[in-house]
Length: 200
Image (tube, rainbow, N blue to C red):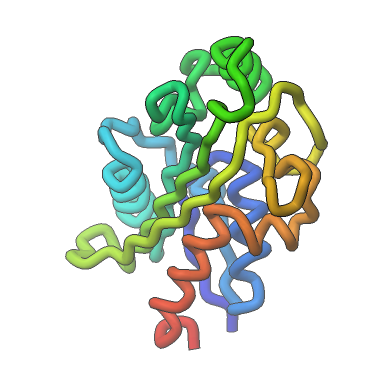
């Protein structure tokens, strides 16, 4: 019998990735929009704070266990920007393309040796809104910001995130390979490991 968890995001790419990764555990992941849950303001100053805020809100409204992630891209040359503001780097209603264009503009003329970056993902699981010990897992994916868009898979900054071990961008990876390598895949693998009793 499938269990239902709510995923505290409106990002279709994240819902798709999370559903694929948890499907083998007979867990149905439904986006919070399925329950008419409105997005809560991300008022935290860290990935951890924002993930907890989102998970608690979704659990409170739905009464279901909730998963929330807060993730973003850190670029060394930009002192860690865009960080927690990755999805709204170019403004509150910015598209992926807007954010990519702004980032590439800021890195124009910067040599490849100074374009180190990493995706960070903090994943939080809360059994209910008052869960005093939420499970918190973090994944990090190192890479380099390329100077052009490559690939059509993925979302966000994937087309400009160059994965050196694969010699391609994140947006050129298969879904399976991305799940194995990515920051979100790493964090989810840790979450599954820590929740094995609940998943059995």
